Length: 159
Image (cartoon, rainbow, N blue to C red; front, top):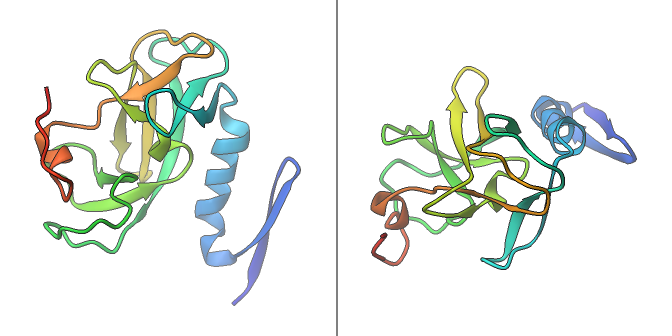
């Protein structure tokens, strides 16, 4: 198998060429495309995504490629349970995926300041500012209703 070299700033790695296209998009997005976000410890839960400068309402925060997970629809599994997404977003999803970039680090809020949706033809999630987000502010998304929280997790009531 042939390897390809990928460089982004001072970071250089070697990947199998088959993975190069996906991961080159990931490195471009994370390290070059939008420098207005960072991840760090969240006062809410674990890690979170924070604005490093003001992000305007409607602005694309991040564009994240997705990779399929080996999970059958309807299968109950704890595989990457806190980091996976339904693809495409919404109630009529087809598969479980993990999104690259910072996608899996956004924390949940019932009053989010950002939202995400699928761009089917590009096989990416776009994360968009729902309102202006100030520098230093944590960026939250809405994970979903009871169907999300009860998909292989301990049953909880969502208010």
